[in-house]
Image (tube, rainbow, N blue to C red):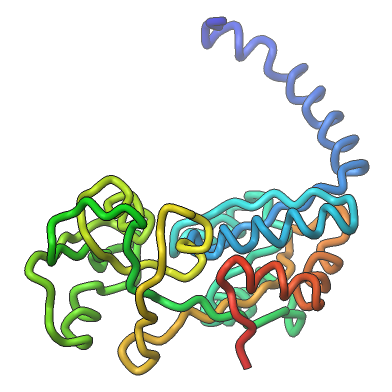
Length: 242
């Protein structure tokens, strides 16, 4: 259905009143929680959300988000009840007053791993890695150099999601992926973890944001720290960090 701009302006006041009224009802009744997280953490958070719903009956909607966009979303009041991201980002969020201070859960560790497709079709010696860019804070070429014995062909892509696609579509024989991404895709398998002194694992924490208005976000954080929550995260590739 197509509306003219003039028609939209004419009905805008009434529509806004109706929307405001509906929003009031929804805010008062919904128990769904919105969790935004780093894209690489999303598979594990989705697994934990399913386990939490089975236990508590509350739906948790997980929104993978590119690096650098989580805090701007909160600043612009895009609904995020909880964020799960790197510790340094949460430190900054606390300084800016965007999250509840001193109320974090975690940390959890997401390792970087050399991986391959179960049915490899890429050329021998080809290796897919993320290029350093705003979409990925992994310098794949630097990691390969530190690992030694560089592959014959290096294929640079935008992020680890693109690495997974490249492996499963025959574009490369091996690639760098997070443990969570391998656990989420049964077409992939791990070869070896990247040593911590070559590239340290990502450390995530979870925290309630200043925008939390619905349900009980602290209950989901408590679940993530419980034995059942830790088991769901671990099965999906996130390890509890000391």
